[in-house]
Length: 429
Image 1 (tube, rainbow, N blue to C red):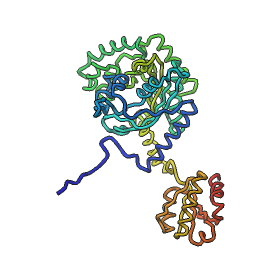
Image 2: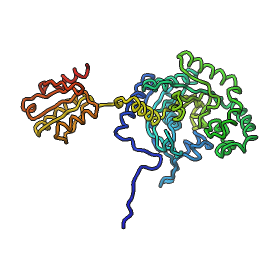
Image 3: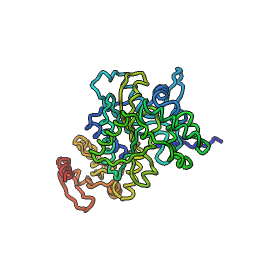
């Protein structure tokens, strides 16, 4: 007897079902609009890159490279990886296409899928999506503040409330080595009390201990020396200016001396944006980013200051869906007009009419496979349509159509050749 195969999505990966698609479209539409207003240009980089790009850029001691990157050897012998984040690929494109020779800064944005083999949990997936914005070729602290402001505006446009920016400075190559030594000395004397991950980080990436979420590490972490107290003058001035810019635009923020972000390429400013609530803290950061002045040079390009950030689309969508559920409101996108038809003649005329609405850029729904008016109107109601257009045998012969207000039940008959123009007026109301 043949074994029954149960096919399902791989662990940590998920289908984006039709009912969720409007939420993704909404996030991307808002991101597109705001990014372009601020002068960003869209770029798409390959989903598969040379694995060395990430090990050089992100850092060999990071969790992403050690445990989470999907890497494989191709038949041709190339060592490749599914991209775990956007920044390294965008920096590679900046170098490869000679963007350093274009007017600076170069403002780039992208969105799409990323892949990490991390443990699946609430808000975390192995295939996930981000909106990413990067600025290459500008060292002024105003860019750090503007990146934060842009992501804050995207979330506000999506109706997020009670947002808070957590921010810190992790210094640069001048002041961070001294701080790392202090940190290693502090944690080494308490190594036996750390979790197994942090004991490993102590050898390869001690700053990441500050980012640990394990309960047993929290009291030890809370007493650790703070990097902000050991910044060099340049980093201290840069950070002070960023905070002054945020004050100027009345951005709500709080200093988090233990915020470090998980990637080696970060320098100076690092930030995350949360919904300032118990639920928001559980879900985690909606946006994270910071300055990465050394990355382009590390990858073989010229010394190029840079700053950017990324928003987690799944986390944003989960919050939007939960809000709609709690408020019992309509979904992000509804069809305002539904075309119902009865009889073969009406169906033929409906096909042509549907194309006229498409050319007029009026969104309209239909169910041509259904013949029952009751079934079609029930579907229109379920879709949240404001109006149903009813075309029966009688109306088709008389070249007319009925407009039915789905809320009041009021009906009006108009000529078929006037209906597209008439619905345009209705929708403007």
